[in-house]
Image (cartoon, rainbow, N blue to C red; front, side, top):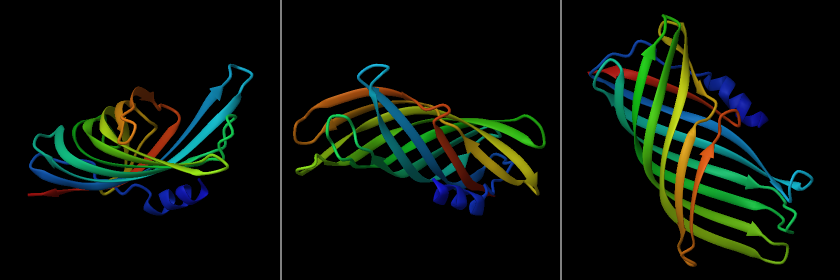
Length: 201
């Protein structure tokens, strides 16, 4: 977490503010997400999951408010010990997909936007049971919505960040063919900060 904060301070969100139509959007985000799952009711132990993400993207802004683009992301999650005896492990997720962004300036300083995204994803899990290492691979698709806030500091450069969103995931394991579906609500648990720039055509 400390390394992520230091990196975020270095890149400190240099983002353009008054982007206009017929421009190219180029950028990337770094993110952190912390999840705790209780096992065994209110008195049970907690299973912790900390994940880190890097997601570059490229888009075309075809109106003053709408941008369409492509995005890839690389996420790694560190899985802690759990009450069932597992000694931890990690999970890697790679994604490629598209997004539609609607941006709304509130003033010369603030702007808000929302990204509706969807695409394909692949996961690789490595679990340490204490006696052996289990590797599980799977793939599937995702659909999600993430709002963000932009703060303009000087010369149309500033900070762009979000604190989570809502996402639906469908995954299928390659060997066992087991399927999983779930909705993740990460408001307050995730933190993303990014840099981006619009280039006029």
